[in-house]
Image (cartoon, rainbow, N blue to C red; front, side, top):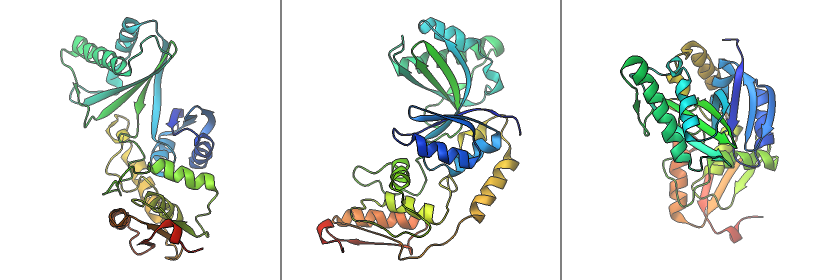
Length: 297
């Protein structure tokens, strides 16, 4: 439980600094900012807490191994040589997601395909059976990133991206990403403990809901059904239950006059009200149908 290991928090461009501050508050050690990412060290508890409490991370990866490659065959051979049965069983379903920057292999899909082949072939050679690939509901997600000639294989601890908060029942037209909404609030300097917020073009209500979660100290991951790390072999349910309990205990109320919104589109207002109710803030966020130019001063 107390052993530290590398963790990589992925975010949106421009949110690296506030994400670093958020990770430090959660318990990260030796945090370093990269491009759309923050690398740090932490324990299993740190990883679980980050998945529960991060408003600014899209996903949290645990790097397993880094090596240089020259071509697709080199990638296949080195991925196959890795001891995957430390993390995968034959009966488990898995998926591989690939990404590349200036790589000798230009297709992210082909990168993922070759690593899938390598994992399946290793299990078949070693055990005579293989785990199944499931792109829709995998137990384990493996992330492959190739930058130049350097390849890193990681486990995705989050499963569904962390911007999926579970409260959205209506997306509306061009919905605002939840992480982006939380990031805009952080960058604006808005104080959720005592400052009023009005969104005059609220759409489906994402900005207001993220603000309400901040004002009420509601952890963004509290109502998600499951995270990727819960399928790992080293999963510690006792640690996770404590984190869940503490997150529930931290929730507070805020004045109904603090958050409000409006939109000219009646359909958007209807969708926003449903999302707000589903998030548990139906009596605390006041919204109405109104043109932006008619907003009160």
